[in-house]
Length: 313
Length: 323
Image 1 (cartoon, each protein chain N blue to C red):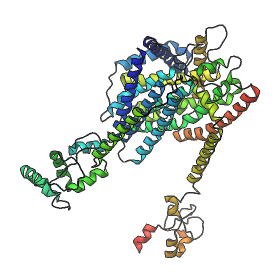
Image 2 (image 1 turned 135 degrees about the vertical axis):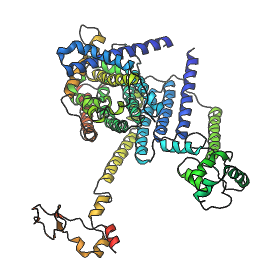
Image 3 (image 1 turned 30 degrees about the vertical axis):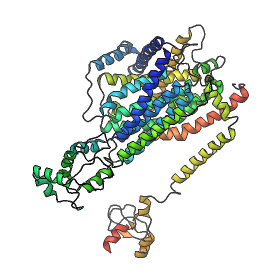
Image 4 (image 1 turned 90 degrees about the vertical axis):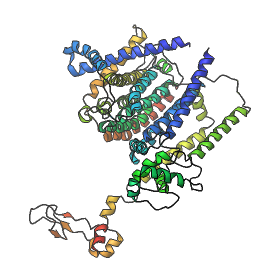
């Protein structure tokens, strides 16, 4: 792969992610403002972005300037790197690693670390509280998310995301791994800091928490990364359980985009109905319910994959 | 062409790994130190990727980012000054030179030869500048217990001495205890550099057996087959040990198994308290609102009608005051 191709791929990834982020914002706007206001909803993300771009961005007094300034970029770079292993179609993948799924899940931790840096570097109370809560998120999501996601590679006998999709040609894994899907989708909201688990931001309580002192373009980057990681987690959910790009008639990338947005819409709509969970409740949920449930899921999937669905390799 | 790029990437990653490792040593902020260590390990993971060992690289990132995170959390919770702001301010106000937390030069005063006792504050405060300068020159005698420190910077010490009112030895001890300076640092640097040179020489000189085959594509599959095939016993044994460790940790962390907490120790009467107050074993009942109401059986308060609650036994500290 020449250097030019790498640059083109990186640029395409960022453009695609930006479009996806815009669509996520639109989805959220539709759920918040209602479908009647769709014109406003379509304009709102762009207006917000334009407003943030015109805003000055000054670090607060006594901030850890290096961490403060670098945190949004770490978050964005992590999201961009994680996007590389999502297959949009057969062969349409940024980086076809043999350990693609593992690569994605590993890259989630630097993303959360970037959020922690953003909160810590502000030298403010709400930011540091946000940092601690983000750390609680990192401790919560890693095990259940990994254990839930592992059902798919167990059945497909590969960690490569493209092969996992190809193995679902006949039957999507959601059909016989429903428990894994539920655990995955709940745990995916932790590192994405989405609504019931957004304690690190907690608009009404922490005044933005991690994002409190940010403004201007850096805030835009952090918001972009937050929406981007949510989009990617939904896309990975489609890859793992909903057959990825596969579907009749339409070209594969269209199917993939449609499935991802549909899954995101369902998750966003359902998660709005739950009140925000405190960080200790979140930790209890993760360790006392999701982890044992995901172990049960692994056992069920193992038996099914071995005896019912013929096993992998 | 691609060979040059590989060398460039390798050099960049190696530089990042070394610089961040050094940054971990010299920074004053615990948080930054943990992050620097994390960055160093991530740069090493990049080198693994360069060697086509992507599985190893991912494991490296996952284990170290998580591990360092826990380390940072523990340090932030336990340390007095995890961000390093206080130490940094102190260092600046004392005019101690050097990188970050570890200053190469020990601040040096002018009374270390004469006495170990702390000097009165007024002496320092009111000493004319020139006189201090002169005394300092005179006191700079060899044979002090400085263990090979560099004693160049007399100027910087004066600000500190004026502020603190300690003699040099005490001042040094204070700085060491705050990890702002250490006499052993130059030696540590020399030993570290020598070790690094020796290791590099060892790597260069050793006649390595090169496999000559290209690395295989799907490392995860091979490792998985090996773990559940040839190394099954060791793998399962390790898993069993880890489960035993987790169970043991849970057992230790349980309230029943652990030594009584501070709150419990206040509640439960100690043997000493029982000897001193034989009646302490028998609970007294009192009204939450009217402490003068006391009786030895539960009931209602005659004043307000509330349920009486057991009165906590008297604390050791209170009794000590009475005796």
